[in-house]
Length: 113
Length: 115
Image 1: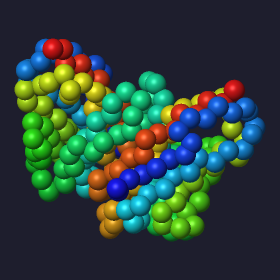
Image 2 (image 1 turned 180 degrees about the horizontal axis):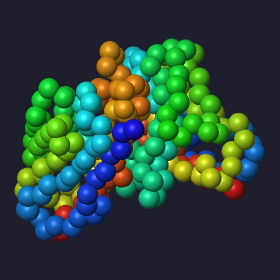
Image 3 (image 1 turned 90 degrees about the vertical axis):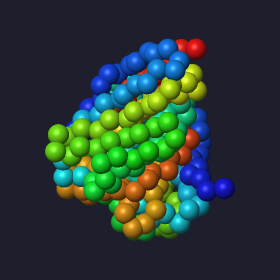
């Protein structure tokens, strides 16, 4: 059964710092992995989708990598800004790649000015 | 504007009073799904639908029903709500043909309180 874990649960950094958020999954037979952002009281916004055939995806200051063999994905945020403060969630398809999507519990990021 | 809409956004109700939370998308997506989000438990999938008239259970389906009679709508039904269903609910959809393996578009959420 697919399980998704995110470490750390919370992170506070000064503005301008580069940072890495971690996501691990137990079933590596996945088609892809997604990273989302959630602002307080809001819905989720998709940030990056990495297909299993890719090793990384980039969007602006964000770079996500996927290593299926080790069951890990990382989200790298370069030159962090206060506007990056939010909760970041990763999600992987459930075992058997049915219609299930399994989320990690998220990392809440605070970027201090 | 392409979007997923949910109604109501906020709802306070009492135990046992049937309610429906509506979800609608205007992107012609085949895949739709419902999640609940609780502190300490994260986002958990309730039900999903791969297409019209095709629905299946997620990880926490107990106490919920869904229907998918048309592509754009995927209502969540609580026949007899209980306090443990107090939560923040999200609807999501994604384009064909990949369904869950494609980018998910989320609605704004419905905050439900069951007294």
